Length: 121
Image (cartoon, rainbow, N blue to C red; front, side):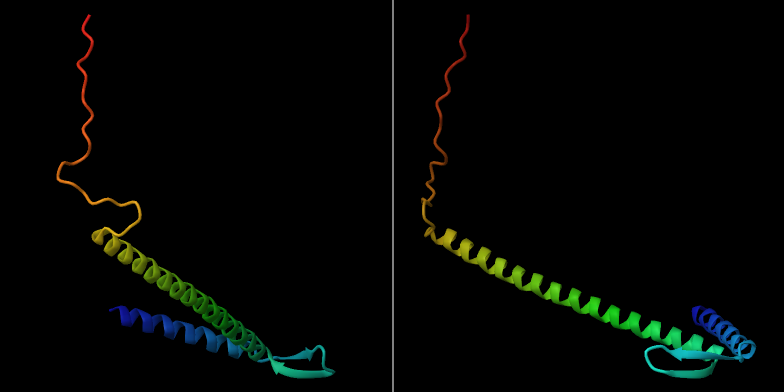
């Protein structure tokens, strides 16, 4: 069903494009500004050249954005791997008791602070 509606929309767009071409066959003069040339082209061709140029530029900009995102993701992944390696290394050292200032744990637990009875008036 979805494919039917997609095809229906495409057929509608094709009809609109054909109608645009048929109604805009008149020639327009296009000046290629820095050059001393003038070109006579049908209006629909000028329109489609502009549309195609815009699509190509948008595609190039999208590719550049995707490349930047991909590079940023790769850097973040490498940093995450480095940090995970550091965490693993520190956990191994902690398990071995070789960290500076680390003392092996005793079975006694933490030092107990003697409690004093509350003052009763």
